[in-house]
Each structure stands twice: as structure tokens, then as C-alpha cells.
Length: 407
Image 1 (cartoon, rainbow, N blue to C red):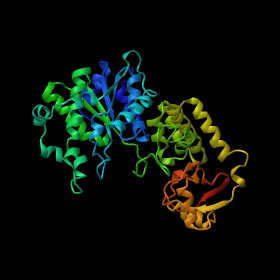
Image 2: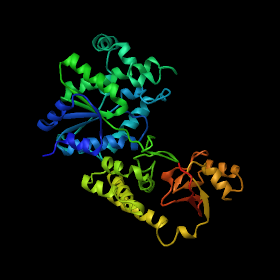
Image 3: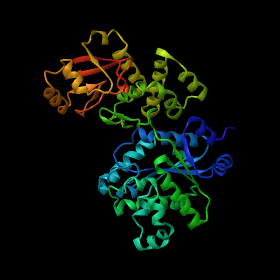
Image 4: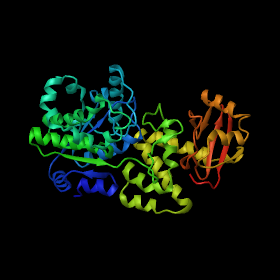
């Protein structure tokens, strides 16, 4: 029987790991309780969380028990990792609402029946802590110079790091300690930007409990050029159908760069790796078949099979069916150009001012997604077979044809 650790490595999840040999043996011989934390910074999970949920699902399928932690406590502080400024402070009501939204979404990916997984909220213990007791019990286990060496703090050092955010690592480390005590949790997982925080939790468990626990980070969801994946003309690619429609979600994955197809199929679907390699090896126009399968499989996991079928049919109708696109006025475009400039030059608007007003009124769509940024730059992922569809108002459609400029 294959070890799930090998599965994660083969599919490209693993970025860093503490004591890989021991962890691999543990996963092969015991039912391991492991956790991933999700801070409620919004009322929906997004594409960046999706890779963590997939890693969690692979481990559960192998018989291990996920502990899904929502940050009702850590969400009051905000993780400084990957941030250039302080996160917006949330009210207790916002945090509670967002946590409830997360719980409903996570339940679509993870099976919570018969103790196969548990859901916890770190507000249940962090909000009850006595500050002086925490300082004496846990604070003594952290050195300031080591904390400052962490990448999450180094990036903020010049712009200013608040004492509030400086406590975040201690809080996350305490979560791991508490989960080990309460549920026998042996493994913490998270994105690679969480490595310093995870290491802190591993060390805290060793010092306070004398327990061998482990940390594993997954690679962040990035494009082949290193930029984060999951950004659209309307903002983040949300997993909530009310924030990003199943059609828009489908279209995003249908339009990924050729170079990203194999990575996305490996990380974001359950297709066997033999099929992943076969699809990724397709060349020329046939690579679009692989993208269609990718979009369908990812949308099916997130929104269900019925919505995936609807999204696929809708895309085929707009982009490939009944000559719909052939009858649209054509506007030349290129990657790297401002959408507003392209449309103004193509006489879609009488002026850029008209275009700005239309965008402000939610009257402009790109590939059926509302454009909210007047300075939006056209990207490779916006074009399907060299074509993107713009909708002005309710009934006017225009076809953007991509030129030779490289994104």
C-alpha cells in the first residue's frame, strides 16, 4: 500500500518538512491526527486555501484524521506572514460570522462523520488565557532574536511590526500545543509561508510536553512565472458561489497557462498521476482538452458535478458553439495592455471617461465577470484560444483578439 507521504510528494504538495524520515514512518504505521488552520479574514475561503484542503483530503483518504481549525482567536490579531502592512482589524461579530462560513465550506471537502475529522475553534482556548500565566508558561520558550529571524517578521521590519502582530507566532504555536494535549495531534500543515510559525509549534511541544510532533508545508499556489495564482479581474477567486460564480470559477482554470496545466492537475484534482502526465504531455491545440478537463474536475470538487456540467456547457456555448463569437465585433488586444485603453482604442467607448463610469456602475464584464478595477491589465489567462469576450451593458458583446505581445 502506498504511503500518503509519497503521494503528497509525487503530486507536488511538499515544500518543507521536519524530520521527513520519522514522519513518513509515522504516517505508514499509525492513524495520525493532523491539523491545518484557517484564519477568518473574509466570509469565504479562496483558491489559495484550496491546495491545503486538497492535501487534507488526500491524508483523510489514507485513513488519517484531519483537525480543521478556524481562527476565532488568532483572527483577532491577524497573521503578518506575506503582508506588507497590518491586516484590517475585525470585530468579534465579523470573526464569528466568517468562522461559520468557513465551517460550511470545509464540510464540502472533508468527511466529518464517525470521528473521521473534527472541527475546532481556537477562540475556545485562546480567549480564555490569562496574559501573565501565558507569559510565564509559554513566553519563556521563545527568544526574541529567533523570532525576528523568521521570514514573516523580517519582511515587515522596516515598515513597522506592531506588538500585536508579534504575538501571532506564539498564539499559533500554542494552538499546536493545545491540540496535541486535547486530541493527540502529531502534525501541523500549512502553506510554505507558515514555516516559521509551524517550527515554533513543533519546538513548543518538545519543550512543554516532551512530545515528538511534526510540521509539513505545502507549496503555495503560484503560476510558472512565480506570481500567485487565483487573482482575477474582480479580485480573489473565491470558493463561495455567490462571490465567484461556478462559471467564472470554471473559466479561470480553463484559461490557465499551458505551463501550469500539469501542476494544477496534480495539486487540484484527484486524477491518477498517469492521466495527469498524459494530459500534460498534449501539445498544440490539444492542450486545450487538458485545460477543459482541469476546469471541469476542479469545479466539480468545489461546486459539485451539476454546476460543473453547467459551467462547461456555458463555456462551450459562448466560446465554441453556434458561431456565437464569430458574430461579435472584433477589437485587437494584447497581454500587458490596460483593458480600458484597449476598449477605448477599439471604439467600444466614446471616451475613457465613459468606460470609467461604466465600470463604476458594474456595467462591464470580461469573460462574464464584472470588471471592478479601472486599471485592470489584460493577462494570458484572460484569453481562450486567443480570444476574450467583453460585455458592455446587458446586450453588447465584443471579441478581443490577442496580438503577439507577451504577458
